[in-house]
Figure 1 (tube, rainbow, N blue to C red):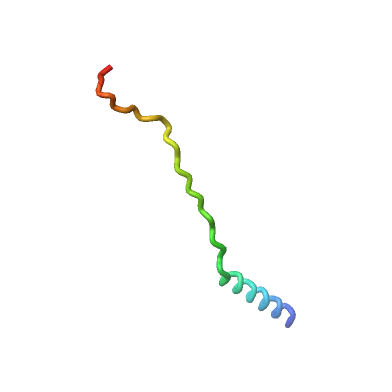
Figure 2 (cartoon, rainbow, N blue to C red):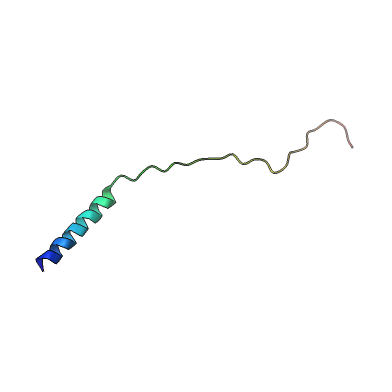
Amino acid sequence: MSTSIKLLAMAGLLAGLAACAQPQEETFVVVEPEPISVEPTYTGKLK
């Protein structure tokens, strides 16, 4: 009985340490989306 209590205490301690551990910082990469089509430029002439 005492060994099972010790195992449960150790499991609880390990779970507590894992919960309090500092999480690793995630790296986010932001990629600028390219335009789907090129917008027409104003030339001053009507076609």
